[in-house]
Image (tube, rainbow, N blue to C red; front, side):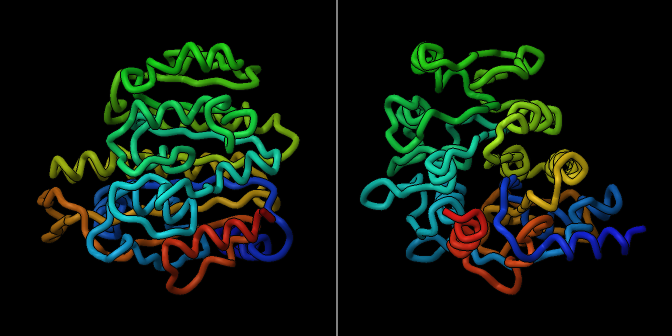
Length: 328
């Protein structure tokens, strides 16, 4: 059965325009933490995705990357300096904005603040990732000319950083909710903010993604959904490898959900780390350093067009491949 699935995935991997894309980011999910998770908890769904590429992660000027520079590279095809959010002397158009321009539905699901660097790079344009109140204003369609009618689904943490725009979003047709249970599946646009800051370790990210898919799947024009588990990175900054591994498991549950829930003859699923972390593994102990690294990371893909990802790629190449597959 396993090999029949692999053959099916291979058949779906080439040819034809991609209708929908789910772009999954494991923040800080370098090879060592995935290896540790597998050794600690057993085989991962990630291991079953048939297409793999090695991704180079350096920012503009070289050196050690951060989430702002790496996610910007994925979303815009441009290298920027550390800390810049889809900004390089001016605004850089993102894949999410191109999707809005094409008339697709769009969504962001994260267990960090929705104004944090990784999700922010999909829709905001600032030279400094720490300007989160300014980043929040880019969520408001009337204040952001590239956002079309607005992102349909926004789920994550960060009420404190977004409080200044919630009334504006409500006026522009968003349902504003503060718990996952309140997310209305019949809403045209919804923003769910489930914590004041980042959400807590163990947050059921898969349930958040399921809510988003139920809304976006009603869109007859295809969708572009970005999903981030940013708590992997936060755990590693705390040198807590065990918690980081449990967060990798949560991301793996998301991948399982996506591969079961979505029609892979029309949908492309990409799973990638933005950068690595200085994890020291000695016989898979729980020792870790708390710093980013400049190591290459792994991209895994399945579904329509997944065969385009292969070999060694610059992080900026990911943008160009996705742009061509979707037909922007």
